[in-house]
Image 1 (tube, rainbow, N blue to C red):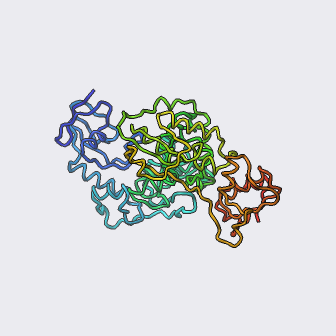
Image 2: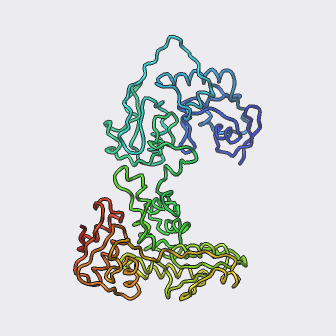
Image 3: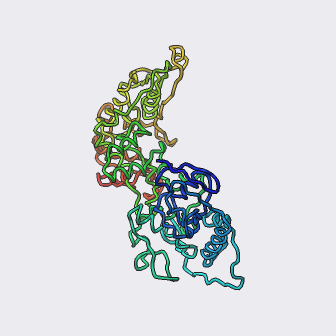
Length: 492
C-alpha cells in the first residue's frame, strides 16, 4: 500500500513501512544523518536527521519515524538548521583533528556548517594510542564519535558481538571485554565495522579508491584467473549449501573438480585471512563441493538458440575445453580438434594420475561434450586456412606448451637426460618410463616435484631433487614438496 506525503513542498508516494528518511533519500531530498546505515536498524541516536512534521510536537528523527498518509514534513527550517549546528558542534567537540575529506562525518559537517559555539571553549581531546599492530585495519579511538554503527553491525548483522560500549558517561569508548586485543577477543576480521564507520576511527590498512576497492578488499577473487566469487561460495559451504556453492563456481569455470585437484590456488596466496593466521583452504573447498555434485546444476544450463556460426577450437586442454563450453552456451556450433587420441592436453599428459584421477578428468570433459560440443581426436591441424576454407567462422588456438625445456648445458643431449614433460607423457600414455636406478631431478617447480614422485612410482631406486636456491625459495607448492619428502624424495 502506498502512502502520500509531502516533503519540503514535494509530493511523494511512498510504500507503507518506509521511514521518512528513506522516503526523502529515495526522492533525492537529503537529510543529514550519521548513525543511520541502510544495513542497520535505525536508532536516531545522533539526532542529526531531525525534522518538523505539521501537527506533531517536537523534532522527531527521520530515520525512526514511519511515513503516514498525509504527512507534511519540513527538513530545512531555521530551527532545524540551528539545532543541527549545535548537534554537530557537540559531536566534534572532542574530535582531535581536522576533518578528513573522505569520511561521511566530514561530508555531513560541511553540509550543516561548522560554527564556533563557544569562543573560549577548549576541548579536552582523548589521548588513546592508535592501534596499528593488529591485522587488516587500524583503530583510532580518538576519532570515534560513538555512533554505534560498528557495534550494531558486529552484534546484529554479523552475529559476532566482539565490540561494544565500555565504561560509562564521558569515559565511554568502543572496545572489547577487558580491553582484549581483537585477536584474543575472537574478532573474525570481516571488517564490516570498518565498512560502516563514518568518522575514520576504523580504516583499512591498505589504501584504495572506489575503482580499486573490490580488488583490495576481496583479493582472493581478483587473484583467481577466472575471478570466481570465492567469498560467496565459501559462505555457502559454511551454510552446508553445497550445490549452491558448486553452481557459484560453475558460473566462471566448467572444470570445478579438476581445479579442486590441481589448481595452484593463487587465491590462497592473496587470502586476507593469511594476515590473521592461515589462508582459507580454498582449493580444498572447491574439491569438497565438486565431490558432492548431485547434478542439480545441469537443469540450469541453457544453450542459446543456434547462431549459425561455426567455431574451431584447436587443442583440448583446459583453455580449449573452457572456450568450447562458453561458445556453445552462446549458441555457436563448436568443434574441438585434438592431435592426440584422447582429449585433455597437458591435464592428461603432464599431470600425474595421483594428482588428477583420470575418472575426474574424463567425467568433466564428457560434461562439456554433452551440451553439443563436437570432438575430433587424432586430428592434426596444420593450417588455419584449411579450417576457414571448411566453413569455420572463427578459430581459437589453444595449443598449450607441450615441448619440454632444456637447460642449455653440456651433456644434456645424452639419452639418459630427459625433460619433465617427456617423462610425464610417457608414464601417462604408456604407463611407464625409461627410468631406473638413481635419478636426479634438476629444478624446484611443480613439474620437478611431479617427475620426482612419478620416478619413484615407476621404478627409480633413489630420487634426489637439485635446486639452485634454498628449499624455502622453491616455487613448487609447499604441500607438494612435503608429500614428495614423505614419499622418500631427497632435496639437495
